[in-house]
Image 1 (cartoon, rainbow, N blue to C red):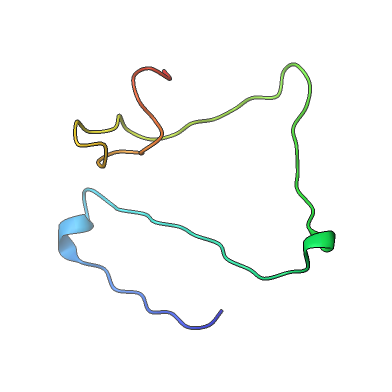
Image 2: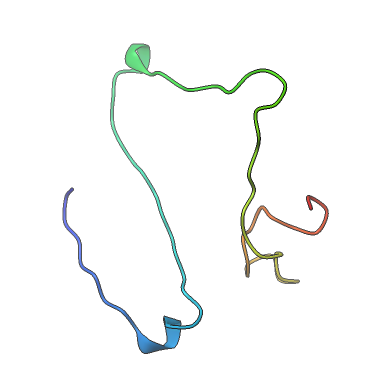
Length: 66
């Protein structure tokens, strides 16, 4: 961790906002990725519908997916 702070604004008590990001530096030839293959492996898309402006909700989750 480089640094961080935690602050809780009262307006988010009933409507929490969560942003997450992971960043790292590594050698290209040492990169490993995971893959779920085969029938029966579930895919979970969690979030509310995207707003008309394309911003609110989970940006990738929409009624077309559900």
